Image 1: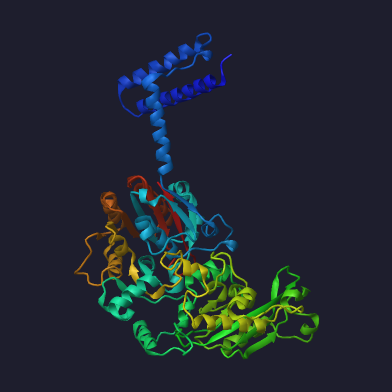
Image 2: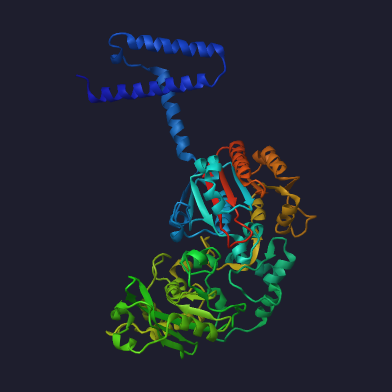
Length: 612
């Protein structure tokens, strides 16, 4: 009887011999050579003859000596190459944006999310932002190129309702994600793609060089002045003039740094599930929500802060509804206080947590719509709302508000951003106060005051105070802008080119003029690593992209989807995507962006991602 070791060796030799034979046959089949075809036919005939011979099943192919070693080496190298290939996959936030997720539960991504991925694929750890909040790109340094195709005038609904016309796109691009239409927050798609907000580290560098960020925007070829907000903010003056005036104004004496530095960024609000008045989401996800003002003023270092907290009870719908709302001002006086009658019958008062009892709710007639109207009248247009995990309170109030300081964000005792510290622990640690200890439940006024005190206390220290995450990683890059200044930005192409990477943009002249505007402040002084290539029409643009793309690290094609014959346009577009993917160097990251309709109320856009 053969030993197990010998049997294993024979099975291994047989497997590798079979693999070698298959490889040889595949190689022969790809060569249009008659002799090879004849040899292949002979091999097949010989195989058939051998199989017809008696006991042929017991015969085992044998590989010995150099042949065996060479095959073993080839297999080892093949496995190594497979392991080293770049790999793209979605994290939870990215999965929630997938077109496969039910529309009501889907949370779209922003164009800035794709921007972060493009930057990271090119300059890896040198990128000021990474895409870790929504995806993971393994071994990006092994990518030969990143190819981006931007297609305007086509939406997510156009793709979903005509998916059969996109056979290549549907089968080759596994990850299909919904993205917010840039027009929904008054941004141009090119500006949205190219403008990368300054990080706190970059901001400090330019302040050191130019004294003020306004001066940096004027004198530096790298810094651009932009204004981004998804809320309707009154801007009677140029943003640079406003910022210059705000810099001259003295903050409150107790503040050692501007309170605006503690405001949540748009990315943080998305990540923390704050309600945002984005066209497309308002219709399906935030029905019945209202903005806290019709129009807002630009927030400043002197804008008033209000602590806010809501208490909720469980009702017959099986969910929580707001039953008490409290706001306090910076002197800790009650600014607004009311009980609220839910639209559904209360089934559990949750007194242990809410402090609400049946006696308190007797005679209460004020509804949530009344509270919304009260707050819309009372809150100043530049009010900063302060609270602990305010996303829950704003959802309970069914309200949008742009200026938020969340104590669960600016304070962290765990050292992990996803693990929030409780308000009770924060108050005890930093204020030496004991709250939420009453046997009758929480008090919304007490919690509002505690949150406001925590912010006021931090303003007497520094921005890193009380935050174990930021104090440990002050010099590290983050997945969203902890300290970024969204009013000023650097160009994506220029940042990539500064690391000796080449970038080329292909489009028609009208579109390229916009790229030039947001890339070169002085068109007479272009960057040697950045080229803008103009085509007479979209077909010419694609031809030029195909002929030049292999010589660049980053390729961006920007075309329009025709209005005349949509079905034909979709098929041609699918063919264009196939040609680009097959013409690119291997391996490459491919991103196709459908920007959405010009009217954002009609539909968002979508993005398709794959590594070839």
